[in-house]
Image (cartoon, rainbow over the protein chains, first blue to last red):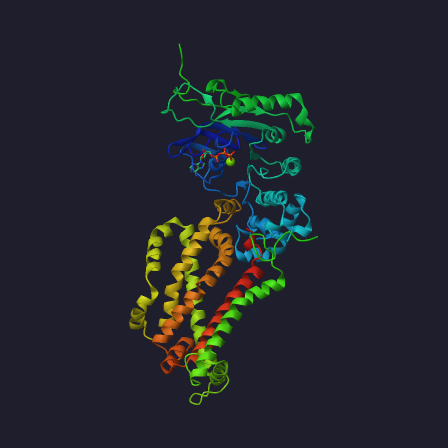
Length: 302
Length: 276
Ligand SMILES: Nc1ncnc2c1ncn2[C@@H]1O[C@H](COP(=O)(O)OP(=O)(O)OP(=O)(O)O)[C@@H](O)[C@H]1O
Ligand SMILES: [Mg+2]
Protein backbone atom coordinates (compact mmCIF):
# COMPACT_ATOMS: atom_id res chain seq x y z
CA UNK A 1 0.00 0.00 0.00
CA UNK A 2 1.53 3.34 -0.97
CA UNK A 3 1.98 5.77 1.88
CA UNK A 4 2.02 8.89 -0.21
CA UNK A 5 0.36 9.75 -3.44
CA UNK A 6 1.76 12.14 -5.98
CA UNK A 7 -1.11 14.46 -6.73
CA UNK A 8 -2.01 17.96 -5.72
CA UNK A 9 -5.33 17.39 -4.06
CA UNK A 10 -5.65 18.43 -0.45
CA UNK A 11 -7.87 15.48 0.31
CA UNK A 12 -7.83 12.28 -1.68
CA UNK A 13 -10.04 9.31 -0.87
CA UNK A 14 -9.48 6.08 -2.72
CA UNK A 15 -11.73 2.98 -2.71
CA UNK A 16 -13.07 3.46 0.78
CA UNK A 17 -15.28 0.76 2.21
CA UNK A 18 -16.79 0.93 5.68
CA UNK A 19 -18.73 -1.91 7.25
CA UNK A 20 -20.32 -2.19 10.70
CA UNK A 21 -20.65 -5.92 11.21
CA UNK A 22 -22.56 -7.12 8.16
CA UNK A 23 -23.93 -3.69 7.45
CA UNK A 24 -22.09 -2.12 4.51
CA UNK A 25 -22.29 1.64 4.99
CA UNK A 26 -19.77 3.18 2.59
CA UNK A 27 -19.32 1.24 -0.61
CA UNK A 28 -16.26 2.06 -2.73
CA UNK A 29 -16.07 5.82 -2.25
CA UNK A 30 -13.65 7.82 -4.43
CA UNK A 31 -13.19 11.51 -3.87
CA UNK A 32 -10.66 14.27 -4.44
CA UNK A 33 -11.02 17.71 -2.94
CA UNK A 34 -8.98 20.77 -3.89
CA UNK A 35 -7.65 23.23 -1.35
CA UNK A 36 -9.93 26.21 -0.85
CA UNK A 37 -13.09 24.31 -1.68
CA UNK A 38 -16.22 24.52 0.45
CA UNK A 39 -17.42 21.03 -0.14
CA UNK A 40 -20.93 20.12 1.01
CA UNK A 41 -22.20 16.58 1.48
CA UNK A 42 -25.87 15.66 1.43
CA UNK A 43 -27.76 12.39 1.54
CA UNK A 44 -30.69 10.67 3.20
CA UNK A 45 -30.60 10.03 6.94
CA UNK A 46 -28.43 7.06 7.83
CA UNK A 47 -26.64 6.90 4.47
CA UNK A 48 -23.23 7.35 6.07
CA UNK A 49 -22.40 11.05 5.87
CA UNK A 50 -21.23 11.23 9.46
CA UNK A 51 -19.37 7.98 9.00
CA UNK A 52 -17.43 9.42 6.06
CA UNK A 53 -16.62 12.50 8.11
CA UNK A 54 -15.41 10.38 11.03
CA UNK A 55 -13.17 8.43 8.67
CA UNK A 56 -11.58 11.62 7.34
CA UNK A 57 -11.25 12.86 10.90
CA UNK A 58 -9.47 9.67 11.94
CA UNK A 59 -11.95 8.97 14.72
CA UNK A 60 -12.76 5.67 13.00
CA UNK A 61 -10.93 3.49 10.53
CA UNK A 62 -12.16 2.36 7.14
CA UNK A 63 -12.62 -1.35 6.55
CA UNK A 64 -10.44 -0.91 3.48
CA UNK A 65 -9.18 1.88 1.27
CA UNK A 66 -6.93 4.88 1.72
CA UNK A 67 -7.39 8.48 2.73
CA UNK A 68 -4.67 11.02 2.00
CA UNK A 69 -4.39 14.53 3.36
CA UNK A 70 -1.75 16.67 1.69
CA UNK A 71 -0.50 13.51 0.05
CA UNK A 72 0.06 11.72 3.35
CA UNK A 73 -1.98 8.83 4.66
CA UNK A 74 -4.08 10.03 7.59
CA UNK A 75 -3.80 8.70 11.13
CA UNK A 76 -5.56 9.43 14.40
CA UNK A 77 -7.17 12.87 14.85
CA UNK A 78 -4.65 15.74 14.92
CA UNK A 79 -4.40 19.48 14.38
CA UNK A 80 -4.38 19.05 10.59
CA UNK A 81 -8.12 18.45 10.75
CA UNK A 82 -10.44 20.71 12.72
CA UNK A 83 -13.95 19.68 13.58
CA UNK A 84 -17.30 21.17 14.57
CA UNK A 85 -19.96 18.70 15.61
CA UNK A 86 -23.67 19.31 15.90
CA UNK A 87 -23.30 18.94 19.69
CA UNK A 88 -20.54 18.40 22.24
CA UNK A 89 -17.97 20.49 20.38
CA UNK A 90 -17.38 22.69 23.41
CA UNK A 91 -15.95 21.59 26.72
CA UNK A 92 -18.76 22.22 29.23
CA UNK A 93 -16.42 22.96 32.13
CA UNK A 94 -14.58 25.79 30.41
CA UNK A 95 -15.65 29.35 29.72
CA UNK A 96 -15.87 30.65 26.16
CA UNK A 97 -12.41 32.14 26.44
CA UNK A 98 -10.83 28.99 27.88
CA UNK A 99 -12.55 26.84 25.27
CA UNK A 100 -10.99 28.86 22.50
CA UNK A 101 -7.61 29.08 24.25
CA UNK A 102 -7.44 25.27 24.38
CA UNK A 103 -6.23 25.07 20.80
CA UNK A 104 -3.13 27.01 21.83
CA UNK A 105 -2.70 25.59 25.33
CA UNK A 106 -3.16 21.87 24.78
CA UNK A 107 -0.11 21.38 22.55
CA UNK A 108 2.12 23.16 25.06
CA UNK A 109 3.42 22.53 28.55
CA UNK A 110 2.17 24.36 31.64
CA UNK A 111 5.34 26.40 31.77
CA UNK A 112 5.06 27.61 28.20
CA UNK A 113 1.40 28.46 28.73
CA UNK A 114 2.27 30.52 31.77
CA UNK A 115 4.89 32.42 29.83
CA UNK A 116 2.58 33.08 26.86
CA UNK A 117 -0.55 33.67 28.93
CA UNK A 118 -1.22 37.18 27.63
CA UNK A 119 -0.42 36.30 24.03
CA UNK A 120 -2.76 33.30 24.01
CA UNK A 121 -5.64 35.26 25.50
CA UNK A 122 -5.14 38.03 22.96
CA UNK A 123 -5.16 35.56 20.12
CA UNK A 124 -8.28 33.78 21.41
CA UNK A 125 -10.08 37.08 21.91
CA UNK A 126 -9.24 37.96 18.32
CA UNK A 127 -10.92 34.78 17.08
CA UNK A 128 -13.89 35.26 19.38
CA UNK A 129 -14.40 38.73 17.98
CA UNK A 130 -14.15 37.28 14.50
CA UNK A 131 -17.18 35.10 15.18
CA UNK A 132 -19.11 38.16 16.36
CA UNK A 133 -19.27 37.41 20.05
CA UNK A 134 -18.92 40.27 22.47
CA UNK A 135 -16.44 40.68 25.29
CA UNK A 136 -19.30 40.13 27.75
CA UNK A 137 -19.53 36.54 26.61
CA UNK A 138 -15.87 35.71 27.23
CA UNK A 139 -16.41 34.41 30.72
CA UNK A 140 -19.69 32.63 30.18
CA UNK A 141 -19.98 28.87 30.23
CA UNK A 142 -21.35 27.05 27.18
CA UNK A 143 -24.65 26.31 28.94
CA UNK A 144 -25.22 30.04 29.29
CA UNK A 145 -25.09 30.56 25.51
CA UNK A 146 -27.75 30.02 22.86
CA UNK A 147 -27.27 27.17 20.38
CA UNK A 148 -26.16 29.57 17.64
CA UNK A 149 -23.60 31.24 19.90
CA UNK A 150 -22.25 27.87 20.97
CA UNK A 151 -21.66 26.89 17.37
CA UNK A 152 -19.87 30.17 16.69
CA UNK A 153 -17.59 29.55 19.66
CA UNK A 154 -16.99 26.04 18.33
CA UNK A 155 -15.92 27.53 15.00
CA UNK A 156 -13.55 29.96 16.72
CA UNK A 157 -12.21 27.09 18.80
CA UNK A 158 -11.47 25.07 15.67
CA UNK A 159 -9.99 28.01 13.75
CA UNK A 160 -7.33 28.86 16.34
CA UNK A 161 -5.54 25.60 15.55
CA UNK A 162 -5.34 26.64 11.87
CA UNK A 163 -6.38 23.23 10.48
CA UNK A 164 -5.72 22.30 6.84
CA UNK A 165 -9.34 21.25 6.53
CA UNK A 166 -12.36 22.02 8.71
CA UNK A 167 -14.83 19.16 9.04
CA UNK A 168 -18.37 20.12 10.03
CA UNK A 169 -21.11 17.60 10.81
CA UNK A 170 -24.53 19.28 10.63
CA UNK A 171 -23.16 22.23 12.60
CA UNK A 172 -26.35 24.22 12.15
CA UNK A 173 -28.71 21.24 12.32
CA UNK A 174 -30.23 22.10 15.69
CA UNK A 175 -30.82 25.80 15.02
CA UNK A 176 -33.92 27.73 13.99
CA UNK A 177 -34.15 28.95 10.36
CA UNK A 178 -33.15 32.58 11.03
CA UNK A 179 -30.11 31.71 13.11
CA UNK A 180 -29.24 29.12 10.55
CA UNK A 181 -29.26 31.51 7.63
CA UNK A 182 -27.30 34.05 9.63
CA UNK A 183 -24.66 31.44 10.42
CA UNK A 184 -24.52 30.26 6.80
CA UNK A 185 -23.65 33.77 5.65
CA UNK A 186 -21.27 34.09 8.54
CA UNK A 187 -19.48 30.86 7.64
CA UNK A 188 -19.09 32.01 4.04
CA UNK A 189 -17.52 35.22 5.24
CA UNK A 190 -15.05 33.41 7.48
CA UNK A 191 -14.27 30.92 4.73
CA UNK A 192 -13.43 33.70 2.29
CA UNK A 193 -11.37 35.60 4.83
CA UNK A 194 -9.37 32.62 6.03
CA UNK A 195 -9.08 30.85 2.65
CA UNK A 196 -10.09 27.63 4.30
CA UNK A 197 -11.03 24.24 3.01
CA UNK A 198 -14.28 23.04 4.50
CA UNK A 199 -16.01 19.69 4.40
CA UNK A 200 -19.60 20.35 5.41
CA UNK A 201 -22.13 17.59 6.10
CA UNK A 202 -25.82 18.47 6.16
CA UNK A 203 -29.11 16.85 5.32
CA UNK A 204 -30.51 20.17 4.15
CA UNK A 205 -30.20 20.35 0.37
CA UNK A 206 -30.88 24.04 0.18
CA UNK A 207 -28.19 24.79 2.74
CA UNK A 208 -25.70 22.61 0.89
CA UNK A 209 -26.39 24.20 -2.48
CA UNK A 210 -26.35 27.68 -1.01
CA UNK A 211 -23.02 27.67 0.78
CA UNK A 212 -21.04 25.12 -1.21
CA UNK A 213 -18.62 25.60 -4.09
CA UNK A 214 -18.96 21.91 -4.65
CA UNK A 215 -21.72 19.62 -3.56
CA UNK A 216 -21.94 15.89 -3.65
CA UNK A 217 -24.63 13.46 -2.66
CA UNK A 218 -24.16 10.18 -0.87
CA UNK A 219 -26.93 7.62 -1.27
CA UNK A 220 -27.76 3.95 -1.08
CA UNK A 221 -30.54 4.34 -3.66
CA UNK A 222 -28.83 3.19 -6.88
CA UNK A 223 -28.19 0.02 -8.81
CA UNK A 224 -25.26 -1.66 -10.54
CA UNK A 225 -24.31 -4.95 -12.18
CA UNK A 226 -23.85 -6.86 -8.91
CA UNK A 227 -27.46 -8.00 -9.29
CA UNK A 228 -30.24 -8.09 -6.73
CA UNK A 229 -30.95 -10.29 -3.74
CA UNK A 230 -30.11 -10.51 -0.09
CA UNK A 231 -26.53 -11.64 -0.66
CA UNK A 232 -25.71 -8.31 -2.29
CA UNK A 233 -24.80 -5.97 0.53
CA UNK A 234 -24.80 -2.51 -1.02
CA UNK A 235 -23.67 0.59 0.82
CA UNK A 236 -23.84 4.25 -0.08
CA UNK A 237 -21.95 5.66 -3.04
CA UNK A 238 -21.42 9.17 -4.31
CA UNK A 239 -24.33 9.42 -6.73
CA UNK A 240 -23.93 13.06 -7.76
CA UNK A 241 -21.08 15.55 -7.71
CA UNK A 242 -21.64 19.13 -8.86
CA UNK A 243 -19.60 22.27 -9.19
CA UNK A 244 -21.63 25.19 -7.87
CA UNK A 245 -21.61 28.77 -9.12
CA UNK A 246 -19.33 31.16 -7.22
CA UNK A 247 -20.78 32.18 -3.92
CA UNK A 248 -23.33 34.94 -4.08
CA UNK A 249 -23.15 35.76 -0.35
CA UNK A 250 -26.81 36.57 -0.50
CA UNK A 251 -29.77 34.37 0.09
CA UNK A 252 -31.41 35.81 -3.08
CA UNK A 253 -29.92 32.96 -5.03
CA UNK A 254 -32.20 30.52 -3.28
CA UNK A 255 -35.02 31.64 -5.57
CA UNK A 256 -33.03 31.38 -8.79
CA UNK A 257 -34.51 28.79 -11.22
CA UNK A 258 -31.14 27.11 -11.87
CA UNK A 259 -30.61 26.77 -8.14
CA UNK A 260 -34.04 25.19 -7.69
CA UNK A 261 -33.46 22.87 -10.65
CA UNK A 262 -30.16 21.65 -9.24
CA UNK A 263 -31.75 20.90 -5.90
CA UNK A 264 -34.54 18.97 -7.61
CA UNK A 265 -32.01 16.90 -9.56
CA UNK A 266 -30.05 15.98 -6.48
CA UNK A 267 -33.19 15.28 -4.49
CA UNK A 268 -34.22 12.77 -7.13
CA UNK A 269 -30.80 11.17 -7.49
CA UNK A 270 -30.10 10.78 -3.78
CA UNK A 271 -33.31 10.95 -1.78
CA UNK A 272 -35.85 9.07 -3.92
CA UNK A 273 -35.81 5.36 -3.00
CA UNK A 274 -37.65 4.47 -6.21
CA UNK A 275 -35.27 6.31 -8.52
CA UNK A 276 -32.39 3.86 -9.05
CA UNK A 277 -29.67 5.09 -11.38
CA UNK A 278 -27.01 2.71 -12.60
CA UNK A 279 -23.63 3.38 -11.02
CA UNK A 280 -22.06 4.14 -14.39
CA UNK A 281 -24.69 6.80 -15.12
CA UNK A 282 -24.18 8.92 -12.00
CA UNK A 283 -24.01 12.63 -12.61
CA UNK A 284 -20.40 13.27 -11.61
CA UNK A 285 -19.91 16.50 -13.49
CA UNK A 286 -17.43 18.08 -11.16
CA UNK A 287 -13.99 18.29 -12.80
CA UNK A 288 -12.33 16.69 -9.79
CA UNK A 289 -14.81 13.83 -9.61
CA UNK A 290 -13.49 10.36 -10.26
CA UNK A 291 -14.95 6.93 -9.89
CA UNK A 292 -13.36 3.51 -10.08
CA UNK A 293 -16.01 0.85 -10.33
CA UNK A 294 -15.08 -2.77 -9.70
CA UNK A 295 -15.55 -5.42 -12.39
CA UNK A 296 -18.61 -6.75 -10.58
CA UNK A 297 -20.21 -3.36 -10.34
CA UNK A 298 -19.80 -2.64 -14.03
CA UNK A 299 -19.70 -5.74 -16.19
CA UNK A 300 -18.60 -5.19 -19.76
CA UNK A 301 -21.32 -6.26 -22.14
CA UNK A 302 -20.81 -7.33 -25.74
CA UNK B 1 -54.47 36.33 39.77
CA UNK B 2 -55.12 33.16 41.71
CA UNK B 3 -52.43 30.52 41.25
CA UNK B 4 -53.61 27.39 39.48
CA UNK B 5 -51.03 25.34 41.36
CA UNK B 6 -52.26 23.67 44.58
CA UNK B 7 -50.36 24.43 47.79
CA UNK B 8 -49.60 20.90 48.89
CA UNK B 9 -51.16 18.05 46.96
CA UNK B 10 -50.60 16.73 43.46
CA UNK B 11 -47.93 16.76 40.77
CA UNK B 12 -47.99 20.53 40.38
CA UNK B 13 -47.93 21.48 44.03
CA UNK B 14 -45.89 24.57 44.83
CA UNK B 15 -45.52 24.83 48.63
CA UNK B 16 -44.62 28.32 49.80
CA UNK B 17 -41.31 28.98 51.54
CA UNK B 18 -42.87 28.95 55.00
CA UNK B 19 -44.87 25.82 54.31
CA UNK B 20 -41.69 24.18 53.03
CA UNK B 21 -39.87 24.87 56.28
CA UNK B 22 -42.83 23.69 58.31
CA UNK B 23 -43.08 20.47 56.31
CA UNK B 24 -39.34 19.82 56.53
CA UNK B 25 -39.33 20.21 60.31
CA UNK B 26 -42.47 18.15 60.83
CA UNK B 27 -40.75 14.72 60.98
CA UNK B 28 -38.24 16.06 63.51
CA UNK B 29 -40.90 17.60 65.69
CA UNK B 30 -42.95 14.39 65.66
CA UNK B 31 -39.91 12.26 66.48
CA UNK B 32 -38.80 14.46 69.37
CA UNK B 33 -42.32 14.71 70.74
CA UNK B 34 -42.77 10.94 70.62
CA UNK B 35 -39.47 10.45 72.46
CA UNK B 36 -40.25 13.01 75.15
CA UNK B 37 -43.66 11.53 75.82
CA UNK B 38 -42.31 7.97 76.00
CA UNK B 39 -39.40 9.04 78.22
CA UNK B 40 -41.78 10.90 80.50
CA UNK B 41 -44.00 7.85 80.90
CA UNK B 42 -41.01 5.69 81.81
CA UNK B 43 -39.70 8.23 84.29
CA UNK B 44 -43.03 8.35 86.09
CA UNK B 45 -42.61 4.62 86.75
CA UNK B 46 -38.91 4.84 87.60
CA UNK B 47 -37.16 8.19 88.06
CA UNK B 48 -33.76 6.45 87.66
CA UNK B 49 -34.64 5.01 84.20
CA UNK B 50 -31.51 4.67 82.06
CA UNK B 51 -32.97 3.41 78.78
CA UNK B 52 -34.76 6.60 77.83
CA UNK B 53 -32.88 9.41 79.57
CA UNK B 54 -34.69 12.69 79.98
CA UNK B 55 -33.44 15.86 78.36
CA UNK B 56 -31.90 17.09 81.58
CA UNK B 57 -30.00 13.82 82.02
CA UNK B 58 -28.59 14.17 78.52
CA UNK B 59 -27.65 17.80 79.06
CA UNK B 60 -25.77 16.74 82.18
CA UNK B 61 -23.97 14.02 80.24
CA UNK B 62 -23.00 16.39 77.43
CA UNK B 63 -21.76 18.88 79.98
CA UNK B 64 -19.66 16.18 81.57
CA UNK B 65 -18.27 14.81 78.30
CA UNK B 66 -17.83 17.99 76.28
CA UNK B 67 -17.39 20.93 78.61
CA UNK B 68 -15.57 19.52 81.64
CA UNK B 69 -11.94 18.46 81.68
CA UNK B 70 -11.53 14.75 82.17
CA UNK B 71 -10.10 14.07 85.62
CA UNK B 72 -7.66 11.47 84.43
CA UNK B 73 -6.34 13.05 81.22
CA UNK B 74 -7.20 16.71 81.63
CA UNK B 75 -8.81 16.78 78.19
CA UNK B 76 -12.28 17.44 76.88
CA UNK B 77 -13.31 13.90 75.94
CA UNK B 78 -15.89 14.63 73.28
CA UNK B 79 -13.54 17.01 71.50
CA UNK B 80 -10.71 14.51 71.60
CA UNK B 81 -13.00 11.75 70.38
CA UNK B 82 -14.27 13.91 67.54
CA UNK B 83 -10.81 14.99 66.46
CA UNK B 84 -9.37 11.50 66.36
CA UNK B 85 -12.40 10.13 64.53
CA UNK B 86 -12.40 12.94 61.97
CA UNK B 87 -8.69 12.51 61.36
CA UNK B 88 -9.21 8.84 60.51
CA UNK B 89 -12.28 9.56 58.46
CA UNK B 90 -10.61 12.32 56.46
CA UNK B 91 -7.50 10.28 55.76
CA UNK B 92 -9.51 7.25 54.70
CA UNK B 93 -11.87 9.19 52.47
CA UNK B 94 -9.14 11.27 50.82
CA UNK B 95 -6.96 8.26 50.09
CA UNK B 96 -9.94 6.26 48.81
CA UNK B 97 -11.05 9.16 46.60
CA UNK B 98 -7.55 9.54 45.19
CA UNK B 99 -7.16 5.84 44.39
CA UNK B 100 -10.72 5.59 43.09
CA UNK B 101 -10.30 8.60 40.85
CA UNK B 102 -7.06 7.43 39.31
CA UNK B 103 -8.29 3.86 38.84
CA UNK B 104 -11.69 4.78 37.42
CA UNK B 105 -10.37 7.48 35.13
CA UNK B 106 -7.51 5.49 33.69
CA UNK B 107 -9.51 2.28 33.33
CA UNK B 108 -12.22 4.14 31.43
CA UNK B 109 -9.77 5.92 29.14
CA UNK B 110 -7.14 3.26 28.42
CA UNK B 111 -8.55 -0.05 27.14
CA UNK B 112 -5.28 -1.77 28.05
CA UNK B 113 -5.67 -0.80 31.70
CA UNK B 114 -9.34 -1.69 31.62
CA UNK B 115 -8.48 -5.17 30.37
CA UNK B 116 -5.93 -5.55 33.15
CA UNK B 117 -7.76 -4.08 36.13
CA UNK B 118 -11.51 -3.98 35.57
CA UNK B 119 -12.43 -7.49 36.69
CA UNK B 120 -10.03 -7.22 39.60
CA UNK B 121 -11.67 -4.04 40.90
CA UNK B 122 -15.14 -5.49 40.39
CA UNK B 123 -14.06 -8.56 42.35
CA UNK B 124 -12.59 -6.53 45.21
CA UNK B 125 -15.74 -4.43 45.37
CA UNK B 126 -17.70 -7.57 46.22
CA UNK B 127 -15.64 -8.34 49.34
CA UNK B 128 -17.61 -7.27 52.44
CA UNK B 129 -15.05 -4.90 54.04
CA UNK B 130 -16.08 -5.72 57.60
CA UNK B 131 -15.37 -9.38 56.95
CA UNK B 132 -11.71 -8.62 56.34
CA UNK B 133 -11.34 -6.38 59.37
CA UNK B 134 -9.77 -9.23 61.38
CA UNK B 135 -7.30 -9.79 58.56
CA UNK B 136 -6.40 -6.10 58.66
CA UNK B 137 -5.87 -6.20 62.42
CA UNK B 138 -3.60 -9.20 62.02
CA UNK B 139 -1.64 -7.84 59.07
CA UNK B 140 -1.26 -4.12 59.80
CA UNK B 141 -1.83 -4.15 63.55
CA UNK B 142 -4.58 -2.53 65.56
CA UNK B 143 -3.36 1.06 65.37
CA UNK B 144 -4.50 3.93 63.12
CA UNK B 145 -3.43 2.23 59.90
CA UNK B 146 -5.98 -0.55 60.26
CA UNK B 147 -8.90 1.85 60.69
CA UNK B 148 -7.85 4.04 57.79
CA UNK B 149 -7.23 0.97 55.63
CA UNK B 150 -10.71 -0.33 56.32
CA UNK B 151 -12.27 2.91 55.10
CA UNK B 152 -10.03 2.93 52.04
CA UNK B 153 -10.78 -0.67 51.15
CA UNK B 154 -14.48 -0.13 51.70
CA UNK B 155 -14.70 3.03 49.62
CA UNK B 156 -12.27 2.96 46.73
CA UNK B 157 -13.93 0.22 44.63
CA UNK B 158 -17.23 2.04 44.81
CA UNK B 159 -15.70 5.40 43.90
CA UNK B 160 -13.60 3.98 41.09
CA UNK B 161 -16.59 2.22 39.55
CA UNK B 162 -18.66 5.37 39.78
CA UNK B 163 -15.90 7.45 38.15
CA UNK B 164 -15.44 4.76 35.52
CA UNK B 165 -19.11 4.92 34.53
CA UNK B 166 -19.07 8.72 34.51
CA UNK B 167 -16.05 8.87 32.20
CA UNK B 168 -17.57 6.25 29.90
CA UNK B 169 -20.63 8.42 29.53
CA UNK B 170 -18.70 11.45 28.26
CA UNK B 171 -19.29 11.89 24.53
CA UNK B 172 -16.42 10.53 22.39
CA UNK B 173 -16.62 13.80 20.49
CA UNK B 174 -14.80 15.42 23.40
CA UNK B 175 -11.79 13.18 23.01
CA UNK B 176 -11.70 13.65 19.24
CA UNK B 177 -12.11 17.36 19.67
CA UNK B 178 -9.22 17.58 22.14
CA UNK B 179 -6.98 15.60 19.80
CA UNK B 180 -7.77 17.96 16.91
CA UNK B 181 -6.76 20.83 19.18
CA UNK B 182 -3.35 19.28 19.62
CA UNK B 183 -3.73 17.42 22.91
CA UNK B 184 -1.49 14.46 23.63
CA UNK B 185 -3.15 11.32 24.97
CA UNK B 186 -2.17 12.18 28.52
CA UNK B 187 -3.42 15.73 28.05
CA UNK B 188 -6.80 14.36 26.94
CA UNK B 189 -7.06 12.30 30.11
CA UNK B 190 -5.66 14.79 32.62
CA UNK B 191 -6.42 18.18 31.12
CA UNK B 192 -9.79 17.57 29.46
CA UNK B 193 -11.48 14.61 31.14
CA UNK B 194 -10.15 14.89 34.70
CA UNK B 195 -11.45 18.43 35.39
CA UNK B 196 -14.87 17.40 34.11
CA UNK B 197 -15.29 14.56 36.61
CA UNK B 198 -14.10 16.32 39.78
CA UNK B 199 -17.63 17.42 40.76
CA UNK B 200 -18.86 13.89 40.19
CA UNK B 201 -16.04 12.67 42.43
CA UNK B 202 -17.30 14.98 45.16
CA UNK B 203 -20.84 13.66 44.69
CA UNK B 204 -19.47 10.17 44.88
CA UNK B 205 -17.71 11.01 48.16
CA UNK B 206 -20.96 12.44 49.51
CA UNK B 207 -22.76 9.21 48.73
CA UNK B 208 -20.08 7.07 50.36
CA UNK B 209 -19.68 9.13 53.53
CA UNK B 210 -22.35 7.05 55.25
CA UNK B 211 -20.41 3.87 54.53
CA UNK B 212 -17.20 5.58 55.67
CA UNK B 213 -18.73 6.35 59.08
CA UNK B 214 -19.93 2.76 59.33
CA UNK B 215 -16.43 1.38 58.77
CA UNK B 216 -14.89 3.94 61.09
CA UNK B 217 -17.23 3.26 64.00
CA UNK B 218 -16.98 -0.48 63.52
CA UNK B 219 -13.20 -0.48 63.68
CA UNK B 220 -13.12 1.97 66.58
CA UNK B 221 -15.59 -0.19 68.46
CA UNK B 222 -13.34 -3.21 68.12
CA UNK B 223 -9.87 -1.83 68.66
CA UNK B 224 -9.24 1.70 69.79
CA UNK B 225 -8.56 3.89 72.79
CA UNK B 226 -10.38 6.97 71.60
CA UNK B 227 -12.85 8.11 68.94
CA UNK B 228 -16.58 8.55 68.74
CA UNK B 229 -17.19 4.89 67.97
CA UNK B 230 -14.91 3.80 70.81
CA UNK B 231 -16.80 5.97 73.32
CA UNK B 232 -20.23 4.82 72.21
CA UNK B 233 -19.28 1.18 72.60
CA UNK B 234 -17.42 1.82 75.85
CA UNK B 235 -20.31 3.45 77.69
CA UNK B 236 -22.68 0.80 76.32
CA UNK B 237 -21.37 -1.45 79.11
CA UNK B 238 -22.94 0.89 81.69
CA UNK B 239 -26.14 1.27 79.63
CA UNK B 240 -25.28 4.99 79.49
CA UNK B 241 -27.93 6.00 76.99
CA UNK B 242 -27.56 9.59 78.18
CA UNK B 243 -24.11 9.60 76.54
CA UNK B 244 -24.88 7.35 73.59
CA UNK B 245 -27.81 9.35 72.27
CA UNK B 246 -25.99 12.73 72.20
CA UNK B 247 -22.97 11.05 70.57
CA UNK B 248 -25.14 9.49 67.86
CA UNK B 249 -26.86 12.83 67.29
CA UNK B 250 -23.45 14.51 67.07
CA UNK B 251 -22.22 11.99 64.48
CA UNK B 252 -25.40 12.53 62.50
CA UNK B 253 -25.05 16.31 62.64
CA UNK B 254 -21.42 16.05 61.51
CA UNK B 255 -22.43 13.84 58.59
CA UNK B 256 -25.19 16.23 57.64
CA UNK B 257 -22.77 19.15 57.81
CA UNK B 258 -20.17 17.51 55.56
CA UNK B 259 -22.83 16.55 53.05
CA UNK B 260 -24.08 20.11 52.98
CA UNK B 261 -20.56 21.54 52.69
CA UNK B 262 -19.64 19.31 49.78
CA UNK B 263 -22.90 20.07 48.00
CA UNK B 264 -22.33 23.76 48.51
CA UNK B 265 -18.76 23.39 47.18
CA UNK B 266 -19.95 21.72 43.99
CA UNK B 267 -22.56 24.39 43.35
CA UNK B 268 -20.10 27.16 44.11
CA UNK B 269 -17.00 25.98 42.24
CA UNK B 270 -18.53 23.95 39.40
CA UNK B 271 -21.44 26.08 38.21
CA UNK B 272 -21.56 24.19 34.90
CA UNK B 273 -21.93 20.77 36.53
CA UNK B 274 -25.69 20.44 36.85
CA UNK B 275 -26.33 22.24 33.58
CA UNK B 276 -24.83 19.64 31.27
N1 LIG C 1 -20.78 2.78 15.67
C1 LIG C 1 -21.66 2.19 14.84
N2 LIG C 1 -21.96 0.88 14.98
C2 LIG C 1 -22.84 0.30 14.14
N3 LIG C 1 -23.48 0.91 13.15
C3 LIG C 1 -23.23 2.22 12.96
C4 LIG C 1 -22.31 2.92 13.80
N4 LIG C 1 -22.25 4.21 13.38
C5 LIG C 1 -23.10 4.28 12.34
N5 LIG C 1 -23.68 3.11 12.08
C6 LIG C 1 -24.63 2.84 10.99
O1 LIG C 1 -24.09 3.39 9.83
C7 LIG C 1 -25.09 4.00 9.05
C8 LIG C 1 -24.69 5.40 8.71
O2 LIG C 1 -24.68 6.19 9.88
P1 LIG C 1 -24.31 7.73 9.82
O3 LIG C 1 -24.41 8.26 11.20
O4 LIG C 1 -23.01 7.90 9.11
O5 LIG C 1 -25.46 8.31 8.93
P2 LIG C 1 -25.74 9.82 8.50
O6 LIG C 1 -25.77 9.87 7.03
O7 LIG C 1 -24.81 10.74 9.19
O8 LIG C 1 -27.21 10.02 9.05
P3 LIG C 1 -27.88 11.34 9.68
O9 LIG C 1 -28.23 12.24 8.55
O10 LIG C 1 -29.12 10.79 10.34
O11 LIG C 1 -26.91 11.93 10.63
C9 LIG C 1 -26.37 3.89 9.84
O12 LIG C 1 -27.12 2.84 9.30
C10 LIG C 1 -25.94 3.55 11.23
O13 LIG C 1 -26.87 2.69 11.81
MG1 LIG D 1 -25.00 12.19 10.76
